[in-house]
Image 1 (spheres, rainbow, N blue to C red):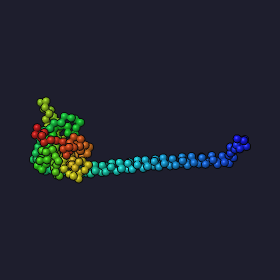
Image 2 (cartoon, one colour):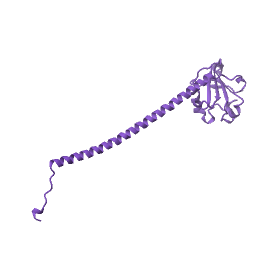
Image 3 (cartoon, one colour):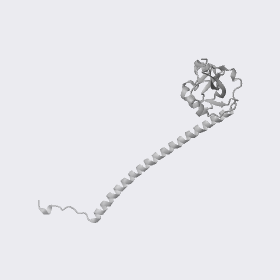
Image 4 (cartoon, rainbow, N blue to C red):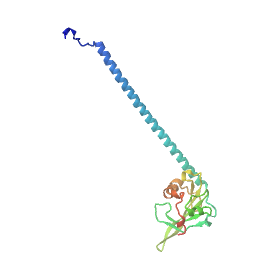
Length: 210
């Protein structure tokens, strides 16, 4: 082939090279910008989700606190049932665990309406009632015997008390005045842990007369 027919490669002038570089750079910047915006959008979504979860958790915590406060308020307004000493009465129960709220000796009183459900292990009808009378322990001849009355606790089935499993817990001094126990911390947490399957009643009828 004659040399004259061979075409010389075209040369780009400076302006063309500059334009090409600028276009490539702009294209890359545009892609980077789109990628950044996508990541920024994802970050916003994550942050929004986190904020929403935190608000939901704060709302749940606030509701729980309100319910607990309501349970405590209700406990302060209730009085011991008159004549509970004539209800069915358990034998003495000795608790030797000094870390327990019920360290000492106690008797359980169960009213007539509650007894049928108690024999079956629950569930309990609205208005069911238990009273626990607590005494200190004193040693007599090497055996634990009742000391002074130290505390009285009332447990009443009340569907309005959702923070404590539908039960109202109220504590009283030996004289029958409200003692200010925490219905959730001092009562329900233990009942929930030990007797959820028995409608939150820890004691059993089988042990009632032992």
